[in-house]
Length: 406
Image (cartoon, rainbow, N blue to C red; front, side, top):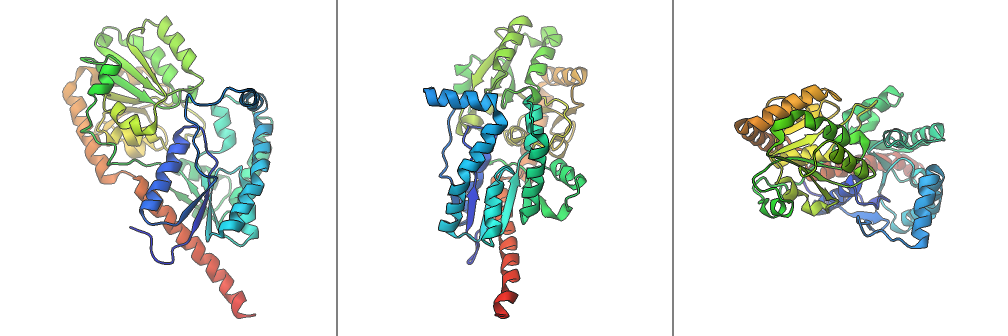
């Protein structure tokens, strides 16, 4: 599918900066949309703060302290500060559709409505729930819920990343047909199971070892600390096992403490943050991939790691939550276990560590199914472009009678 003559011009307002899954989503979507021929204008100009390159000047340190100490106030001030630029971007570009990322940027939606431009709102997560999972105590929970309700109400359509998130909003009283579910995707050309992992294995001393791999932010809700705490119960099965952890985050010091206290020293490699373009060759070094998410009130995520694990043909063990069960058929292309059930997780790990044939069979099935049914970034972009056509057409139809009656 490609852009067609007369396709709407889309202004994409996305303020994500810190290197994360959110910026990967942004960049992959934009790249795919433009490859389809879409006229897509980004505001602000994309700029990602790469890990390890964040400034340490006095101003940066103060801003970091202020955000940590007064997160909600800092976020509100940031939203207000950015509002004039968003309004000017709308006036300057005169788009047919505005695509807005994150509910707190309600000014963008308000400006779009004021200028008669349909707005598509993109929601990856409810801010107040994500803050809860990240152990951030919010003082203004009711305000953020009100702002979210306002943003959803003003938007023409709302794009969410998972069915559980759609169901959450429907349960709150929003109409189901206002939401479109578009999960995270994967680039099947770059995530190629045939990639050579020799360089990565040599760098981390993985030669001759069976590698258990994890990639993602090092945060408590991902379950990587719980996973490391459970591993020593496998005892002698770990003789030839190395755990490769890719990612960074506030939990890293705790993970290193767990490793030191549980006798896993020498078996765990911390790769730290790596740019997304280097992820495929690192995943190629995995023999078994894990996604040990903890049980939470609402698993609204669309785990990018699962799409990428499967595309790389890796046998996956994941907790049975949200989209995991949509992507993994238990015993066919991976294994699912009940969240927080360490006994079931370890039993499945034991099976895979001991049975190389089973690992190969699950990996082949993962690769085959991924290529047959995977949600790619191209599909994601094509769906949003089609949604843009729909809302732009509806806006045009609404304007036509008033123009004819003048």
